[in-house]
Every structure is written in structure tokens, then in C-alpha cells.
Image 1 (tube, rainbow, N blue to C red):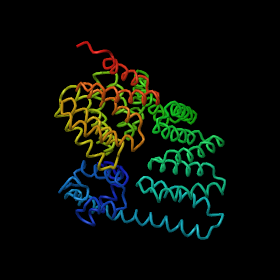
Image 2: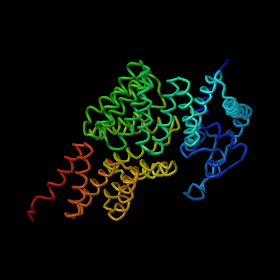
Image 3: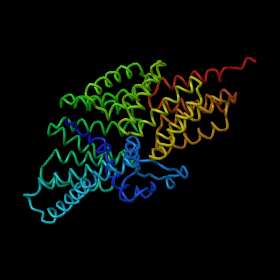
Length: 453
């Protein structure tokens, strides 16, 4: 009886097949050797590694926590599988090289008749480089795609080129430049009635504004992204825009609205079988439920962790672990919270994910404060605050100040607590988080009232 072969086990995440074949040919290698030799960035490597480990195709050795002293090798099963796939990998590699060679030849000839083929090649190669996290190469090909599409009057491909550039700039935390390219893409997409691409452009602008703490403007953009997706009859795009809206509403303190939207988003993504998108949706719903003190919050976090592991998405796994730890701190299961946070910090450090690491450091500080380990907590609060300021996350910065102020208040250091909580209140008010600003007021009332001892 014939059984279909699920090649998606190794073709997703991107880079899994590359890593498998690299290890077959090079043998057990350090992370530094793999990143250089296989031309991978950290994110691609971590996702591919997670997939191979989950399949039992690879093993990891550690001589130290430093990435330079970590090694990855193939198990017997992994080696056998890699040998079987090696001829196909060679064929795919030669195909990729031949595409680049063909593009170079056609560009050298620069004949008008070859423009459609050159656009096809530029789009395919730019997408491949982006998926592999090769930002410089992806940026070059996306720029060439936008330029050639503009000269040849192919508006859709020109939009795709500018969107590609915008996404790369966002990955590099260059948000103002990302908005510039996304805005170019938006104007062109709207002028040609490309509602799906207009939705993508609005979403990209909204994401950049959100990361800069400009929530009101970001909400407008996400609403436009959802409308564009509806006009394009694209349920997945609409769900992602609605999820982004819910994320901001939760930060603004409109948590009931956020949770309602996220329930709808999760149901829609589950119906659509959008497995890659579900881990983030589960994590977001968990966060909203936690803010509402709902008992099901931890269940959603655990579901996010499980789903992230299933699709080999360490970043969302780490966010789920870090968020779930907050529940275990409240439940005073300090051992479990500590285990979750250690794993989350390790993943974020391996990914070079500073924003996520800052959140994990904040929860670690809260864990230590809950155990009255004041000096250790102060050290992690310092780290969390430094990261929040480094990445420009004002909500995270205010959260650190609030939580640190609460700890300082418990220590009966009234003057320091007032200073921290006042700073937190000002930041929350500036970014439009009224509920959090009110929480700061509650904490301050007990400090600014006359002592009755």
C-alpha cells in the first residue's frame, strides 16, 4: 500500500535540508563553523537544529554555554536519511546556482524580451535569500527586483520588491526606513487595486509603528490591513491583522476586547490549518487571559510552547516559556518558573533576540523578588532595563520600572519606590497604556499618603 512521504519534515523550516547535508559532509561541527560554512544566520540555524533534534536526526554537545563551544552532529538515523537525500540536495543546489548564473547572463545581455524571466528569477532568489536570513543578499535582489519592475511597468513586482526591502529593514530594527519602503509599496498597490499587497504594506507600517510605541497610529494601520485582506478575500491575512490589533489593545489595557478578538483569530487559524501561525496566536491569547486573571492562561501558554516545538519555532517557544513562568511565579512554583526562564533565556541568547531576552530577564527579576532575593533581582532588573532602552521598547522599559518599584516598595524604600513608579507612570501615559498608568497610581497612593505609624 502506498503511503505519501512527508518531505515537509525537512523542507520546513527553511534551512533544515541544508543543515542536514552540511553535517553529513562536514561531520560534527561547532555552531560557529556551521553559521559560516552553511551561510546561515542564527535564526535559520536554531529553527533547523530544533527540527533535526525533534526528529532524532541530530544530537548536540556542549563544552560550555558559549555558542563557540557547542557542537552539532548527526545520529545514525540522521546520517542514513541525509545519505538518501544527498543526490536530491545536490540537484537542488545546482539548480539554485544555475538560476543565479542564468540571471547574470540575462542581465549581461539586457534584452527587453528577457525582462519577464529576469523578474521571475529576481523574485525567486530574493525570497530564498530572505527565508535563509541572508539580509544583505536579500536586500540586493529585492532592490534589483523593484528597479527592473519599475522600468518595465510591472507594478505588482515593484510592490513586492519594496515590501521585501521593508521587511529586511524591520528585521534590522531600522523602522523609519522600513516605513519608507512600505509606504512606497502601499501607494503603488492601492493605485493598481492590489488589495492583498496593500494589506501587507499596511501591516508592515503598523508593525514598525508598534515597535516605536506609536500605538494609535499602528491600530489604524492594522485596521486598514484587515480591510484590505477582506477586499482580497484572504482570511489568513485578515487573521494576522486582527491578531496584531488585539496585541496592542492588550497593552493599552483593553484586555477584554483583545481576548475576544484573539479567540476569533485562533478559531480562524485552526480552521484554516495555519500551523505556522498558531503558536504566536496561542501565546497572545495566553497573555490576554493572564492579564484578565483567567485560569486558562497557562493552558494557552503551554499550548503555544507545544505548537512552537511542533513547527520548530524556538522564538515563540521561548516567549511561551517566559510568559508561562509569570503564572508559575504567581502560583509560587518557583522551581518550575526558574526552569522555564532558564530555557527561555538560553533560546533568546542563541537567537540573538534582545527584545525577548529583556522580557525573560524581567520575569527572572520578578521570580527572584518573589523569593526576597533582592540583590539578585536588582541585577536582572538592571539587565532588563538596559535591553529595553537598547531596543527602544518603551512599554518594556515602563514595565521594568513598575515591577522594580513594586519590589522597592516591599523593601520599604519609599523614596526610591516613588521615583521608579513615577517614571513608570509617565512612560505608560505617554504611550497610551492607561490601565498600566492607573496601576502605577494605585502603587503610589500608599507611598505618598502620610505615614500613620
